[in-house]
Length: 125
Image (cartoon, rainbow, N blue to C red; front, top):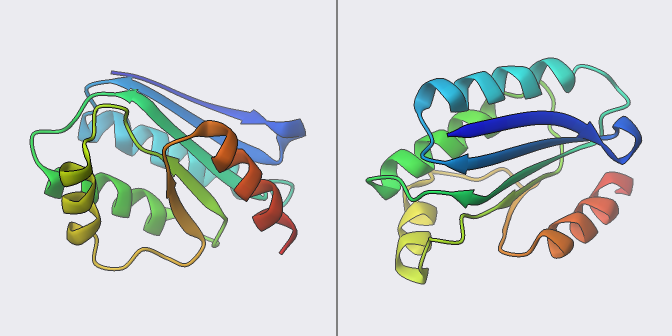
């Protein structure tokens, strides 16, 4: 898996781009890097673009990776998670069922433009 963590939108959005098979180690590294960057008050949102990531062996593992990321942040930030293209409706529903409670500031998307539009509004709320 390849994971990149960068600042976009003038440094106000942390972008995580993932492709291939996610491992806990790589997801942990991305989470820690995002947590570090989010300490800068100029950062106002997070975009996790996982469109090119492969499906995990279980929905439970996918949910665990998402939950660990969202709850690792030291301050609540609007977070848009673009689900992998390979997730069918059944797998997506299974992941959502495995997540105990998704914070109000986090949303799932299938489209990058829609996610960015939501983040633009959420940052100003």
